[in-house]
Length: 339
Image (cartoon, rainbow, N blue to C red; front, side):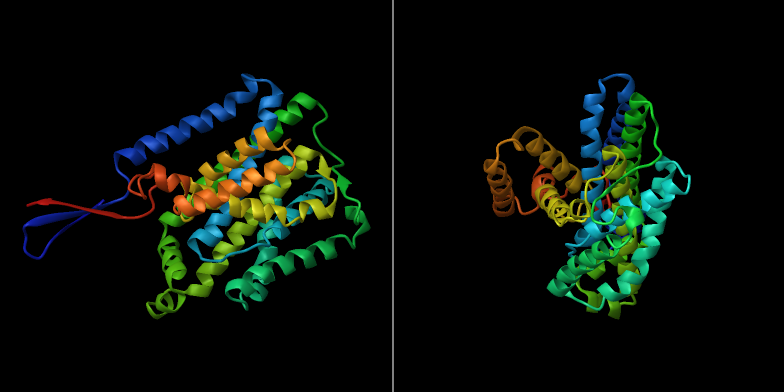
C-alpha cells in the first residue's frame, strides 16, 4: 500500500488493492484448495471423477479470459492447443515419461509451439483474428492426423499409465486440481505484475497504449503463449482422465472454444473470479440438464441471453457490486481521509 498527500495538504490519499475482503477471500480459496486435495480420502471416486471436469473447465475459462478479457484477443481456436496438449502427451508417454509429470513438459512444449504461431495469428485483427485462430486449429488437426504413430484419424489410447484404478483416479484428480490452481494463481500473479497494467491498456486502446510506451505486440505474445500452455495442460488432463483420445475431431472440436466463451460471459469478463463462477454454473447446468436432449441447448442459450441482457458484467459482477469487492484484487483502489 502506498500513501500520497494531496496538493492542498487536507487529505491523505492511500492506494491499495483489496483490503479485508481480499484477505478473507485468499484464505477461503486456500481452504477450498486444501479440501479439494483431501477429497480422495473422504469421498467416493465417482465424486472426484466429476470434479475433474469442473477443475479443467475452470482452467479453460481462466485461460480464455486471460486472452480475451485482459488482452482483448477474441479467439475461437484455443482447441488447437488443447488437442496439441493431448497428442504431445502421447509422445512423452511413449518416450517413457509418466503422464502426470509429462503434463508439465507438454505445457512447456506447446507454449513453445504457440510462439511461432503467434507471428501468423497477429497479422490479423478483430474478427479476422478470431476466424484465423479457428483456421489455425483446423490446420493443426489436419497435420496431426497425418501421423499413424498418433493414431491418424482413429484416435489413440495411452500406452503406459498407473494400473491400479483407485490410484489412477486419485492421481488424475490431483493433476486436475493442480492445473486449475496453477491457471488461477498464475493468472492472478500475471495481472498483478507490470504486464498486467500493460494488458489493460492494450485491451482498451492498442494505439494509445503504444504511444505511451507499452510494448503491445510483446505483451500480447506473452499472454498468447501462456494461454496456449494452460490449454495444453488441460488437454493432457482430458487425455489422462479418458485414458486417451476418442478421435482428433473431438479433442480439436470448436465446442471447447464455445464452452470457454460461454463460461466467461456467464461469470464475468475481465475478472479473475468471473470464469470460476461461470465454470461452476456451466458444470451444474451440464450435470442436471445434459440428458434433456434439445432442451439442454435451449436452457444454455436462454441462460446466456438473460445474463447478457440483464447482467452485462456477469454473475460475479452482480455479486461483487460492480467490482467493488474482489477475492483476487487486481485493480488499485484510491481512498482518502482528512489530514
